[in-house]
Image (cartoon, rainbow, N blue to C red):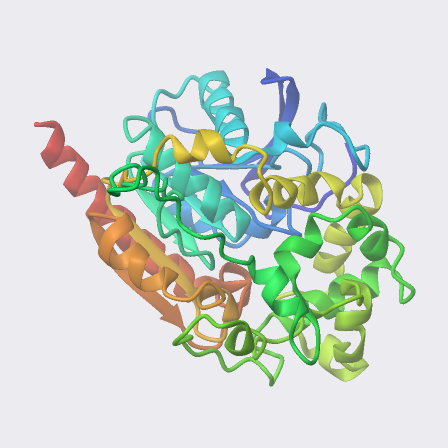
Length: 389
């Protein structure tokens, strides 16, 4: 085990035999049996350590906090790290299956809540959609879930027989045709060269991660998100280049001009250098390929069929959304926030945008994040107890 620092009261352990993996988990509040459990799912490029400021608050409030290194990340082993390996094992539903194995190994038949950030928000949403009996409430962060993809409807009802809708060009196809050709970062993350671009960044891995975390945080002055009205390629191209990249430019070169100054780095209290070193040392060991393979599945056809099986289904457990007010991620898919609030989740408790936070909300503003989370968990526990009577 590498020497990963952990706050007091958090332990690390390994769970072997989980869907082909040995899963590394952080736990807090484990000393007392019978506590309601909360499962915490990190995003990209993060590890379970990203919950280091939330887990002690959960434990102090009487919960058993569990944060795994997801498939492809950190100290979890057993996944295929080759550039063109078994990407299908990283599809959303297989990652949800990993989490069922974690709960089973810990002797848990249900958790009070599953909390996901970024990519973890998508996995958490499908956990609650598919197994509401096990994942009894849901907190999404920085990545709104607007429902499973739809299946074309009514295509055989026309008087002339099958009436298939015309093919709509993909977002990347439309972005590529702009006068300044662009590319969606989610699609770029699924390309063959993305791992080496970031892992072998000319500025060095640690400096690359520093710039990447900085430019997506509230510290970067360019983050003033707004809802998108039309979803046209021209409008989407107004997003910062860390989301809508210049075509032919990798992520290392995209964020390099936004490297914070030495004074800004020294003043950073939410991600000081020792904490960032935990991330850089983790990805130096594993590379980014495991995390990127989820994007290969999400942005392509791998696993889409099994997700479409749930077309039209809603999330019916108590749900909550928490994000930074300076996070462009909540608007990068036009209309997703409203569809999540008004259609995809039938028991939406609230949407909370925290000032002074960008994409890394639970790290940038942990006190406010934890307060909102604990308040929601209290209401959700009351609601589920009432439903069980």
